[in-house]
Image 1 (tube, rainbow, N blue to C red):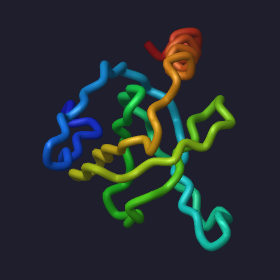
Image 2: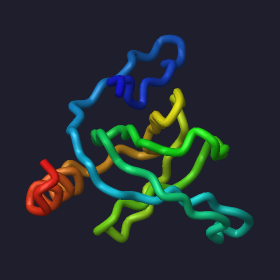
Image 3: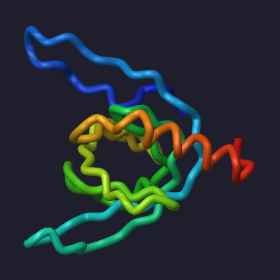
Length: 118
């Protein structure tokens, strides 16, 4: 899996921001919403890397996704607004619409470590 993670083209005059990323192996779901923010479809995926700015997932290459959706990580109630940035085969790179709190990422890493995934 490549390390291209939430790499987006910066707007002219803006620097590209890179965040420290962490290897995680945790089930998650992609929530595609319809009208009035009601969940239209849910797809299973596997979270591989995460940072406060985005993530890299393993996801079926056969399923089309809209540009914007929500990410729900197993063990957490938060639905994280995300935008599709990169897709190559089963690799799905996404950028979070708002940076995550560092505490959230720390809790995720601790949960993953406690479950014996690392």
